[in-house]
Image 1 (cartoon, rainbow, N blue to C red):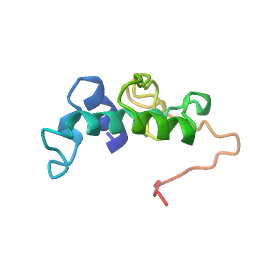
Image 2: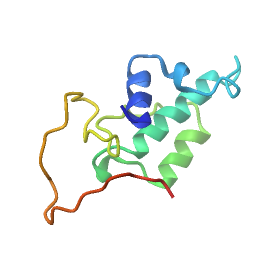
Image 3: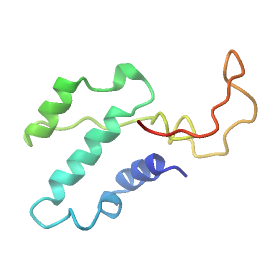
Length: 106
């Protein structure tokens, strides 16, 4: 499973701390790091309309008062939806049959 899918499942199972680099985690910043993880997961939701704007991201990270929405289906996870963890369907979903062999972030 890709790292994004593991991050989402860790967060969903209340094990987000297992996904956070231990060198960053201490007793005073643990909740802040989990909030950052949740906001990051919101930014990669499958539907662009569900993703927060940069202003919303800034606001969610700046304040601890407002609740952060719950992330749903993840895009870029290699499965289309982390909610459905079954084997991806065979065949092409592309209109022009283009295939991507490896995704590399910029």
